[in-house]
Length: 127
Image (cartoon, rainbow, N blue to C red; front, side, top):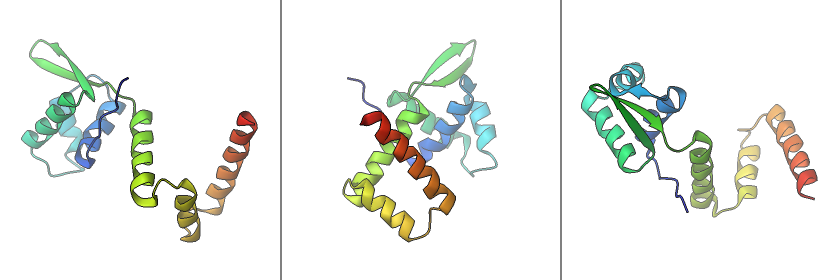
């Protein structure tokens, strides 16, 4: 069975760019990060190499240029991170997580209404 790699916060920044622009060169990744971070090009290349080692990304070599593309989807990684967060912080209880966010007013009334709609729709398809 294929296992989704654990991606660090820094690697997420690289992955976001690759998900938006598959088949992107290291120099273009570096340029896109200029406004967001103060990472040196060598740091970005190290992060790219880590993602290659984790099989989170792949590459095609065209001439002297390497073009990087994702091997894992953004949705898969978000699900893994979400589950990891719930397990780590809320002992696996999604109910506790939602209660915390609702009670701390992090979730707006509009978001609550949307969640209710999604939950009702989900329960109709499962039941």
